[in-house]
Image (tube, rainbow over all chains, first blue to last red; front, side):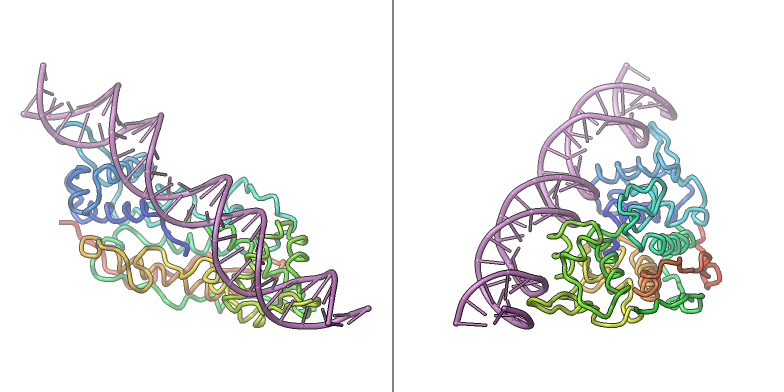
Length: 155
Length: 155
DNA sequence: TGATATAGGACTATTTTAGTCCTGTTTGAC
DNA sequence: GTCAAACAGGACTAAAATAGTCCTATATCA
C-alpha cells in the first residue's frame, strides 16, 4: 500500500490549512475544529511538526502555530519525515542498515535507488502545491524508460 | 517512512532469486534456504505471489514455483500490489475512498497525483532491474520542477 | 494573578503485520 | 495403488507499530 500513516495525513491537512492563511497564528483547537479532527490528536501532530522545525509555536494567550518557512520552502518530504522519520522503502534504505541478509539479499542496491527516486519526487512537491485547491500536475509518464539499463540474461 | 512491509521485501528477494534462474521450478524450501528466511514465511509469501498470478505453481514431487511472465514483464508495482494491495499514499488514493473528511481535507487531489507519480515510477521498475546485480540507474533529478504549477498566494 | 495555549511525556487501546501450524489436494515414482 | 513430496487454504497466535488520550509543567498576555 505504501501508505502514509494517519498522522502524516493529518499533518498535511493541518499544514495546508495554515498555509492558506499564513499571516496569523493558528491554535490547535481552531485547526482541529476546522479539520474536523479530535483536538488531542491535532495537538500531538502539531507538537511533532514544531519539534521538526516546520512550524514555530508561541505559547500563552495569543499563542498558536505558524509556518517556520514559506509554503514554497516546505516539501512533502519534510512533512513525512517530521512524522514518520526517514523515508526509505526497505530497512537498509537509510544509514546503518539493520538487515543481516545483505549477503543473500541481492536487491538492496536497486531498492535504494528506487527509494531515492521517490524521495526526490517528494522533495519536489511543496506545501504550496499541496495547499492549492486546483490540482497540481505531476508528470504521469516519468522518464524511467529512457534511462540506461542493462538487461538480465537468463541462464 | 513509506516503507515496504517485510513480506514485500521478502517477495522481492524471492522473485529475484527465481528470476536469476528462471528455467526450472524452485521449491519453497530451496528458496527459503537460499534466502536465509524461515520456511513457513517463504511459503506464505509464495502463496500470495501465486494467488496474484506472478508465479505459477506445480504440486507434487517435482513441483515448485516458476515465474508466470518474463522478469521484464513483472514490475515492482506488481510485487508490491500482490503482497500489500493497491498502492496509494492516502486512504482516498484508491477507489471507494473511505475518508469522511473529503470536504474539509483540501489536499486529497494533490496527494492522489503524487501517488500516481510514484505508481508510475514503480511500474517502470521491472523484476529484471531488481534482479540484476549491477545497480540500475534511475534519474535522481526527476523533472518535477519543469511541470506547470501555479503558486499559492497568501491572503 | 488568572486565563489561554503550548511542551513533554506517560500510558492505553487498537490495528496491522508477522509468523506458525494444521488439514487437504495434487503429482510423480516405485 | 500406495507413499512421499510439494503446494493450497485458512485459522490462529504473537509481536510490533500506530493511534489516541491524558496529565503536569511552562510560557505569555491582559
